[in-house]
Every structure is written in C-alpha cells, then in structure tokens.
Image 1 (tube, helix red, strand yellow):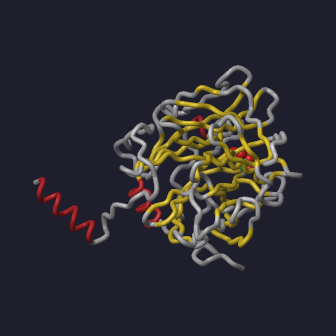
Image 2: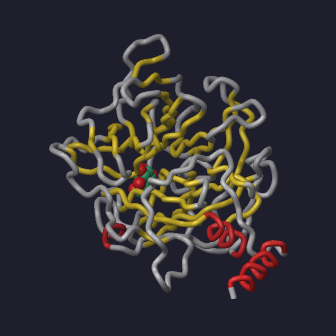
Image 3: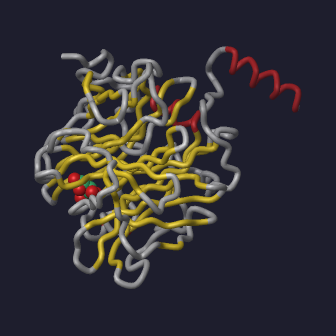
Length: 358
Ligand code: BMA
C-alpha cells in the first residue's frame, strides 16, 4: 500500500499534477504559529481558531491595533503595529513575541530620525509592512506628505529607526518592498490613490538603485475582472514571497455595496525576473469577511492582509490581517494549495500579463 502510494505520488509529480512548489531564499520557521486545515474546509486559506490574536484595548490607553506587520527577529518575532490610542490618530508601535501571538508592547510610538540624524516623526502612520533585506528591516507605511503617501524607514533593532526621503509623490497608500533586489534595483509595489476613501486603484511597481530615487514605474495588476470582489480597487498586501513558481503576492480587493466597501483578499504569481508581469492571478477570493470580528467593528467587512510568516521547509504560510479596522487576525495556508487555487481560478485583467509599460 505504502509503495503504491509512493509510486502514484511520483507519477503525479512527474505529470506536474501534484507539483511540490518551493519557497526560495526563505527561512525555516519551525516555531511559527500553525494550525492544520479543518476537515471539510474548501478554500485554501483557513482561520486561526483563537482569532482575534490582538483584541480591542490591548494595553492601557491603546484602543485598537490592526493592519500590522510581523517578522521573524532574533529567533523570536517582532511586530510593527498600527495603533490608535484614545486620540483616534494612528501611529506605529513596536512589540516583541516568542510565539507571534502573545505580545510585549512598547507603549511609546516609534520615533524616527532622518538620514542626517534629525528627528523626523510622521504626523500620522498606518498600515505598516515590514521586510528584511540583507541586514536591515525596512518599514513601509502610509504617512502624511501633504496627504496620504508612502513612508519608508529602516531599523536593525526595532529601537532606532532611520527614515528615508518619502519615495513617492502623494497620494499613495499600501507600499511594500520585495525582499531582495531584482536586476540591481530595489522594488516597491504601491497603489496610487486620492486623498480620501479612494474609489479606484491598481497595483504599480517602482524601482530604485538606492531607496532614494525611484523610477521605471510599471503597472502590475488592474482592478476588475469578471468577479466583483476586486472590482473597485486592489492593493498589495504582505511582502511578496519568492517561490520557484514566481513571486507569491497576497493582495486585497475591494467591492462596493449599499453599506460601504468590502475588503477581501487573494493572491497572484508574478514573474521572478520581471515582476510587473503577472503569471497567474486568482479571479476568486481566498478569504472574505464572514466571522463576527471581520463583519463588525470600527469599519465593518474588512479583511486586510499585511504580513506573512512562511516556513521554507514545509511551505506553511501564516497570514496576519487586520479585521474590521479593529483587531488583528491570523489565517493559514499551504504553498502548493494556494498555487493550485490561483491556477485553477486564473484570470488576468488589463495590463496584468505584460510588462505594464504604457
Ligand atoms: C483603507 C485603509 C486601511 C483600512 C481600509 C478599510 O483605505 O485606510 O487602513 O483598513 O481602508 O477601512
């Protein structure tokens, strides 16, 4: 019986019907949070049973933490959180954790200095992503620059942060760096927008040799498609994960209803050497607001992915997402299954399949 299934598996693999995809340049995270998929669950992403992992009022004076980044750090985990205190204005907060679920928070917001060492704190800060490139952790967030724009800073210890010049003109939210240079350039995905609750938006790619000067802008993915869940706007989520099938990009998609926007998420695979080309993109969502902590809160019906923890050895991926602009939730998936779902539901839109140089 064992021999038979071994042979069958190998035949399937050889036929590319059961391909084991691999995470490239990733790390092994045996201590990542993980739960197996519940029996009978049909979508490729499933929720942590103890959600939310960060609830309302997580510490004195802090009303809500949501849309937050988590990265492996010194054998444990560091978090960069979107925190809203009793003033209701968002800033970035740091925390440390042994298990990426229970956190010790720094109760003072992150302070930043510019590259010459002068204080340079953002007037507000939200939706941080955090990406390790070589020896530095880069934080990308939505900052004030005469309106919503992308902020960029680096840290080694999550104590001192050096802020770069704002990479792009306003208005733009949802910036995220790739975890390595491609063809000698740093790459940033972002979503140009307006200053309000933007009713449009596509994912763009920009390139830089030094993280200061940005250009060679490309259109990566456009909103729309036959389905409606990503019909209004889309935005990049966590840092793309490098795999042997392409860059795996989780992204959010927004639909419009009588009672406002609904934020769901899914994923696409981008060409490794030319990531403005989408290889495959799911026309179906992987997670949409269904649980009470997603459908009820400060902004109902929001599932907003901003971070992943991926275990290269097993292809296990944990996805951190903000729920209802109120709490942080966790979901899980497995690389092979996600890739299979993307391919089975493949639908490219507009500029997706080409280089996106208009
Ligand atoms: C977007 C951002 C996110 C937020 C979402 C839903 O425009 O502001 O921070 O989660 O709206 O309110």
